[in-house]
Amino acid sequence: MRRSGMFAALAGCLLLVVSPLTAHAKVEATTVKTLTFNIHHGAGVDGRLDLERVAKTIEASGAAVVGLQEVDKYFDARSNWVDQPAWLAARLQMNYVFAANLDWDPAEPGKPRRQYGTLVLSKYPIVDSRNTLLPLHAGSEQRGLLETLIDVNGTPLRFADTHLTTINDGERIEQVNAIVALLKDAPEATLLVGDLNAVPTSAEVKTLTTHWTDTWPQKGFGLGLTSPVPLPTKRIDYHLHSSQLVPTAASVPVSFASDHLPVAATYSLS
Image (cartoon, rainbow, N blue to C red; front, side, top):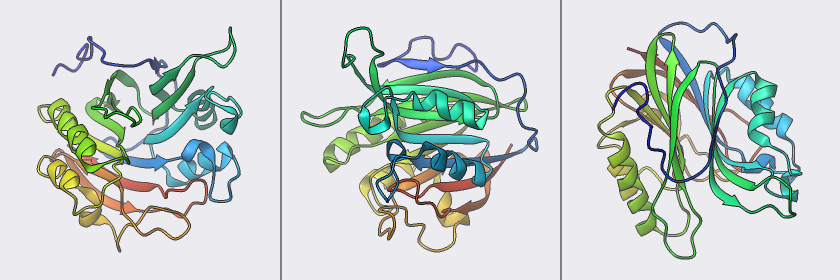
């Protein structure tokens, strides 16, 4: 795939791409701090909607590139009809791309469309992006793969964010196969993050780890359990990296901002 213009044929749903900020944080050229976090539309384990709590969790991680799942944009009263991607990007002073895997008519004529999906935030410029809708079974919820191409101090990083189905293993396997087809030939350093709704021993995760390396066993301590909060029993949130990325740290920060815990990882990018 080409570095520029490689996503000319966008697949699937609406994308919102915001131009890079003129000033972004100075980060070591070959070091990239990342985070994946299913934010449950900003509702914490106490059931309280608090997007500031999500922002503080991201801020405390020090991550320069972030993949979020379950993000609302004018979606519902559950998130006070807020444009969560724009709010988080402004609050954290990061560039962003939002992908609406659900894109519904407004509740009232003249109101914004109701959208729900995934979000990538970056302190580095986002130079290209695309969202591809993943295989969907009847009665399930549409899922997607949001790919971004990020310029990390002159080195391209393909950062992909996804949230796979909870409905059945067969649908999830089809979604995984679609992701492999989309990403496996990428020449750039590639990092796939997200809520895979599958444990490390599953066929879905094993399929992905034939192409990319699971970061947690390399640099994480303990089991890396992420769901459900406050007493997680499963590891279903992941960083999967290509060989151009060498992990140097991985952790599961403590947070009560969602029903998932975030996962942080740091890489040397070569």
